[in-house]
Length: 175
Image (cartoon, rainbow, N blue to C red):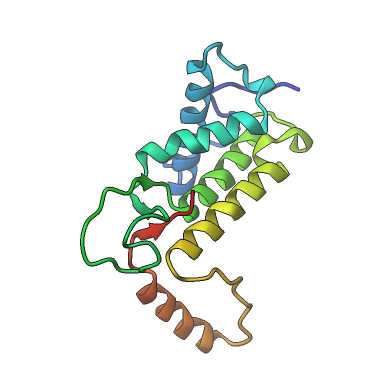
């Protein structure tokens, strides 16, 4: 397997300005490659496994912006707590899910084989599911899979309701 570390594959047609998604994907890929290089000892990308990906996701929690209440906090289970507390800031599930999607695509674009993609492993899916369920449960809002809508009107109405109900950035976490 040949993987280009920290770079992107070149294409024959030049693109004047990459899309926001492509720029973010490249930034995320470079960040992950740098994370691997900073490990002691450094981990070559060709030897990266889902365990390094999980460590990376946990490492990113320190840069999170979402308040996650722990079970012992008096605001645990309250979607909109009335006062500040000392609970940690973490990465929100949606941010982690989007990040894994971009890194999964970048891995294969940079020469990684789909069958060996550490971002596509079952362990990563389980981790993301656990984060989603814990954050939703701790917030007092049980996570339920969205059902597909049959018509556009009800889909637009429900999306507006979801946006207004998900405006809080406080999430409660069960350790």
